[in-house]
Length: 499
Ligand SMILES: *Cc1c(COP(=O)(O)O)cnc(C)c1O
Image 1 (cartoon, helix red, strand yellow):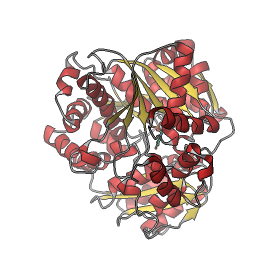
Image 2: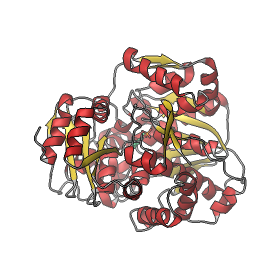
Image 3: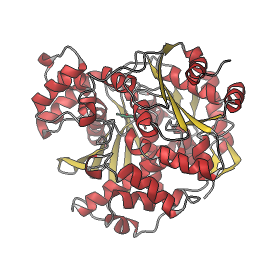
């Protein structure tokens, strides 16, 4: 299978090229030339397998230039060697009749990014060999909090790679920040940027598009790549858990094979929910995809009206990993629903860049609305939902997951759709303990996030996940901060390159 670009149909790349390059030259995103449609007995086949088996089966449909052994070794390293509790990356919890939570936070950083970022470095090293790349790969990532940590955990001390992560100085939680600044590994670099996530992401994109920087790095034996969710090597592994949880529901007798299931996904950069959309295109029986946003509700408006308008105030919320106004992966959906019209996508994105908005045509909007429902919730509603879910179902959810639960409840009220639904739970509640704790009981404030985690553990009778325990005592290794115009110089300095 070949990959093309969302902005230029003449681009043709192998999976290995798409993964090492990250972004296509003209700025478009790599997408498969056609989404593979799987035979009807796929669910039956997959149901008999463990997570690693399901991952091998599905990834081999996309990574056609990889050998079976290569895929098996990447999958085994990521999902079969204890990085995830009990080697179960996507366990299922039942909230009530017909409503489930898929918990994607049992990995090394307690957030869903681990599912892709434990395997991406492995896919990237194999890909680099295939394309004959002998240079050091420098992975560059902007993070709203969870990606950066998960990427560094994945790439730390991987031979032939380095990783540089930028996070917004005031846009991540105390816990997230502590996770990042204490990161271990000889090949990692972390720096905060003055501004919000979009500033950091825009800075990273500019570095990728800068030929002067590319040349300078090249002279020093370095080539850039991306670990942001625009990299195909992150998206493909995310498709796996949608199939996997469906199989688990069949196996547990909760659904009949073939029965349609909805997914409610707390959404920021549109990567997680896009993987669900691809799973649906591949034949997984999915009804509606419920796209849940916090008060940065640009996607809600887009799905309801067809107008994407980023010109609005940026809110900092208690679900910071969704504080995003430019959802990069949406470009891949635009490509699909436009009938794979790269010129149209390029012109929409150009409008977004110059005018801050674009509007899709009726046909595109109609397609989007058959697959997606968009909703958002306020900070107050997020907290009230954490409390009510704990009260009603004895289920402790984090701030991001709560947004999905609330929007799902609104969806049911609005549509009366009672199809079985999986809430995609994207972070451990202990990753945002202060917000979760005060949502449960306003009288329970703690002095800091670490004390909050302990109080939350006592209150809910649940242990703090191992990766978050002992974080407070860890040595801080990175204290750097820079202006958004100074990200490239910060990278050069960290690499010891004189400009
Ligand atoms: C990254 C993240 C999201 C948003 O996922 P996207 O793929 O960017 O839409 C939601 N919740 C948590 C906890 C995250 O880390």
